[in-house]
Length: 79
Length: 137
Image 1 (cartoon, chains in turn green, cyan):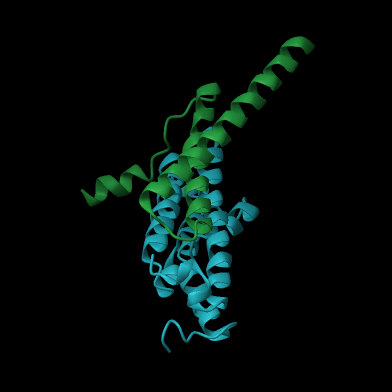
Image 2 (cartoon, each protein chain N blue to C red):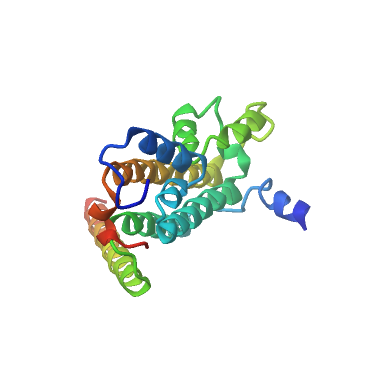
């Protein structure tokens, strides 16, 4: 059991270089949002915390999608 | 000294909180009796760091060829230096997208922990009743 856990950290994850690999951004965004909200909410409460995290994450992902679409359109027009 | 009697700009407490925060993510908030906040920080930072290691192996911690990333990774905890000592032999070199994503995850978790350290120091510098509504979290 211990060795299988350690072995999981010594073998590189199979990750192709394609657009799908960019989805690894989302867990990172979630981590950033969770830590940021954990530091900024004065009185931590499960409901408030989850609502705030969800709202900021949705805003962040929405913003990233809009930027992606704009950049895609610019690239499409330019080429 | 009682919580309500904590004085402003308590330098020894600020130093202890800073060291505890660096040793174990969320440790500073644990000392400040903010256990929920400490638990959220600990789980999030450790999980992000572990995911980075899982993606790119411990080879993403590279004190020889990736010093700027290594500095950010060290912000997670001084224990990262132990992994750095193991990988500095060059035996765990990793390339490509997994290396990039793993480095980004481990470094971002370190930078997030640096933010937590600074915020915990700031929290330690004010009296307990002046923050968090004066209640245990």
